[in-house]
Image (cartoon, rainbow, N blue to C red):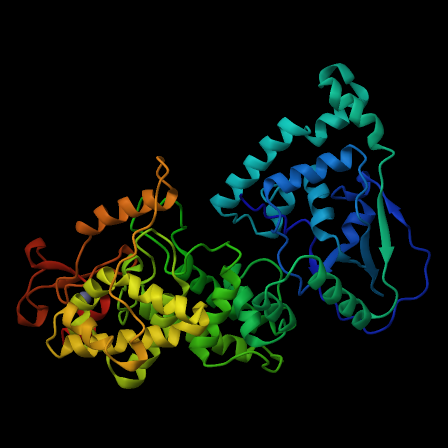
Length: 512
Ligand SMILES: [Zn+2]
């Protein structure tokens, strides 16, 4: 089921407020009108800046929730905390409030509030889901504007909407208030949210590390430098650098957008940009590139964040871009399974491999073995999956996959063919749990699944994919350079006959 992005509806704000809140008489109920865009209550609503994205609910859940609210079912109280600066922070209930406010403001991730939040750049996928959500709402409960219409022109809307609209004025949402300062509020937040819906450990990691350079960089990359500015405390100049580099990295990792089933080999190296796993994926990528783990000191001025981002940009360019040093690794060969699923473990392994190549000055050697190595990856993908299964997670398995890659390349450089190379590598104690047997999926249904459709496309499209004229490896459109067959220095002309396609690295560095 598609998850709806309601993240823009309640903006984030820095939670850290110095002085405790003064006593005040706070309201204990709100009604539906309090959630209109321009309302005093709604415009003061914030979520803590470390809160994860409000995108956990799918279209059914949102629809069910709005319906049960309209039918007068009891909705769990929303827990709030009022900061000294007057903001009202949602400690518990931001999905509930966002869903209702999405309905009232007709914004399921594609309306005016979202457009403002994302500076007008909303991914097609998000727009498509929002549209689907709206249709479902129209069918099952009706749009909010029809409820408004019902009060003055009851004959213009369906009778059941007129009926429900009458009770809308009496429906309320109960509020509870956390007393105390921001640390009290933060403690309540983590306590409540860990109990309610399990936050996965990586997510919790990003949340609690919100001032550390790797976490700031991860968020900047995920939102392409837009969205909430976790870097707003830094100088203007540093803020700008962070946003610019993050935008570039986002493009390198997530462009073009991934659609499923797969019907093109033009795929992003990082998989889906807006999936639940994309933030942890980016954070792990940053950590691998910068050789850091959790628990870093907060970044005081943004310099470290910029450093982290710059290194990531270099590695991403090396993997697949038009940059002169780029290997132009084809995503389908390196980062996707034969059924079209993105493989984070392989992505991390390749990242680590590139760092090794830099240290060992190994790029030329890799290029010599590249043609055969890519055939090996295609034929023996299931061995990589066995490594992932043994170590259970992408982050735990990637060092072993990298090792497997490196050893295979060495064997291939030793004039072994791909079967011999694999046979020798798996004889090593480190890899002796690997078995050369392809597991056939047990399929009894008659319809093709998305994965089977993707697999069929990939199987056939790879046969005619472009190859580099210099190394023989696959070429992807993000990293094509045109090479002079006879060099200019040797009298080569700019004629079509003298042009061939090559990887940027093969063309600029390897050939010389
Ligand atoms: Zn090449």
